[in-house]
Amino acid sequence: MSLGKKEQENMDKDLELAEQEQEIPEEIERKREMGKLRTGYTTGTSAAAAAKGALSALITGSTIDRVRISLPKQKTAELNIAWTKLKPSVSATCGVIKDAGDDPDVTHGAEICATVSFTDQAGTIAIEGGMGVGRVTKPGLGLNIGQAAINSVPTKMIERAVEELALKQLNKRGISVIISVPRGEEIAKKTDNPRLGIIGGISILGTTGIVVPYSTASFAASIRQSLDVAIAMGSDTVVLTTGGRSEDFAKELFRRLMPEHSFVQMGDFAGYSIKQCANKKVRKAIIAGFIGKLTKMAMGVKQTHVKGSNVSMEFLAQVAQECTSSLSIIAEVKNANTARHVSEIIDNKSVTGFYNTLCKKVCEQMQEYSGGKLQLEVIMFRFDGNIYSRYGTHEI
Image 1 (cartoon, rainbow, N blue to C red):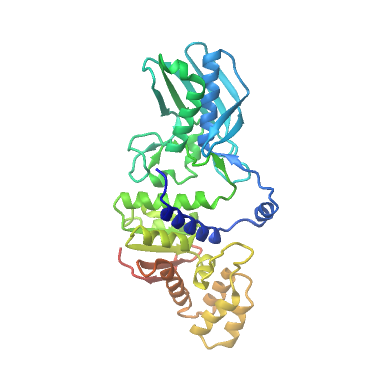
Image 2: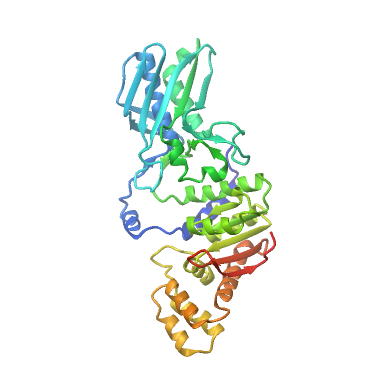
């Protein structure tokens, strides 16, 4: 279903906001500015290529090294076939090595396989997930519970790849395509799949067929999807964390109160995530992180990219000034090297109220993103997992 004009405009604005908040390593940013970042292909594109290669081998009895497949938006791509196993007149299996280009995708280098065979169900193309492809166990993903985690666009790409080769065969018989990922279950542990209720492997994904390095759209889509699952599972409160370590600490803190699907890694997309929570009518958002990221939020920095978003020691000195009259402490904070260094100064000098004031400022900035539609709580963790401060509504 295509988006209406207003919906598309809203989506574009959301992605623009998310783009402003994305933090990209400096080396990658230089490549991006020079136009030298290499794009790659999605798991969906890889699966479609493997399916077409396998079907070609089954029909012709001979293997091919490269296939051309159709992508969304009337584009095409050529991918290499890594290997083929053929059982003449029975089945054929092809493997494609997933190439994510310069994107730090955990599925880069994964073997995406397709096994193709004929069935007696004339005119049907049955696409199923095999070993290493996850199964859906929670609502909110746009797929039925129990279904293989092969999203709609990759499904259509595989169907089209089959039809391009086998329209005549489909008049008399059906075609079965089983997608598998030999290391899929292991790779999935490094993704959001377990949180989303996709069990046993990775998802076969992609909306354009192309992987754009450090794609804002894909990160933003991941946040929206995580929120959709939480809402579909009945959660009205979510915990937004800045990374894996803060999420681990938050899960320990809320282990008896919050289910797995309520935790969403927002990375550097704090404002975007809060705005999405408000739009989706989440009741409460809990923001959990460490002093560095939370200071950026407190500063109201929209662009958390490394070139323009360093933590301001002047800002932290102003916060310290609100909590102490000691000029020497304020000067130490102003001359500190990092936000963590600031926390060491504050702890050594026993400055009271500093962390609470900082969390209050985070809450005030994030409330602007929400338009006042959310209950907010901000939790600042120490680096050992203990809590510096909790500010906001503590009730869950």
